[in-house]
Length: 452
Ligand code: SF4
Image (cartoon, rainbow, N blue to C red; front, side, top):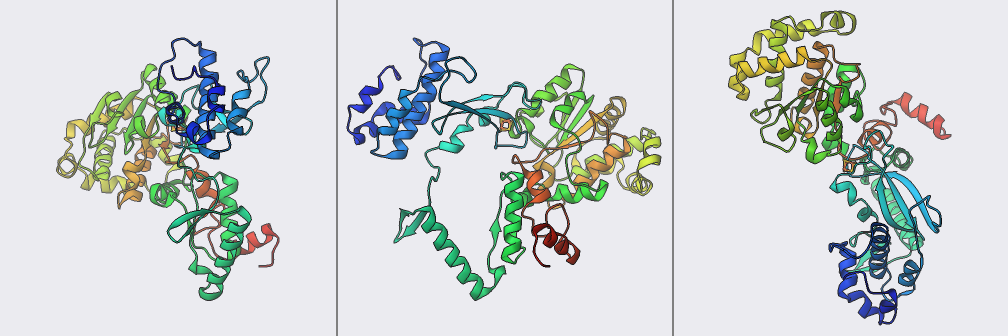
């Protein structure tokens, strides 16, 4: 069996033999064989140990001392008596914006095991397959571990000092020759807030606004649509609040694949009677969980949403008290919707008949609070910001915004799209949506302790 060989077997081999040994290769890929003769604790212990050995061997080439080192520790679960040399670091999964909490067990600087966090209100002890593979982000075979430079078609390893010096010299030359705007800096929505803020500050001191991150192509249309509706471009509620919804309208989200653990909360809501509507041209895994799957012609979301709104207005199902107290401009929307988005017109545009849009309107009216969920399925259309606004308008008409179980649950892509957008490397704004006008620069010059 795979793990029954002792580490002395490894130590007795020449390094090159140990690295190419089939069982080391197997360990590096992850354990795929059942181990019927070991108990759970031993399995977990050996799994972490084995992977540590395998990756260690890949990392250090001929230095087998690290292999021995990982083998020597007899580790138990953190907190268990007798545990030694293992530190638990709480972190979050970086794959998607659900942000499932994860306990990473670190042994001698090596991430050897992980557990999903049961007390997290977001993942409640769950991980999806992507989260379960989280550790490979940090230690996968293809991960770059030190600076490399392409010299004559081959990569050579550099020291950090040398790499930083060479990069600094090159950047200084470029700026001298072509000015600060010759550089474009790509940040990341996987950066945490502090990293994102620091990057924007760095670019500012460099002397340019040439920076961005992946939120530009994922949810910038959401920011435009939502901020123009109620002032701030963010998800209004939270993943776990969805358990309080009585109806959930997914339009532009395949959460079961893109944000799997979020479905936990939807399924909790379903247990409480929540009706689920999925609007999607495809029959997705999310649609498989819906009470009603509605296929629209791709890109016709506004026609569908306004078609539903037409029935809401026609039947007096809008929340008039809410609108009177908190919403401006709905009268104009109503005029437009009643004149243009009649059932026959909606059917012509998006292929959904009037009975279906009426059913959706009725469900939204009779089951409150209700939430609307979207993701890239709305935002990546060329009219994404307008689809987003139509979704917000629908929720305002129903009086669903500002309520637990309601709102617009806008599922971001990476784990910190929101934070990186709020404080990070945006070309059109200093941190906190200050913009890049003179007053904003004066403010941040003061914050950063430099003359304007
Ligand atoms: S749902 Fe998202 S955050 Fe949670 S484990 Fe899966 S990929 Fe990671």
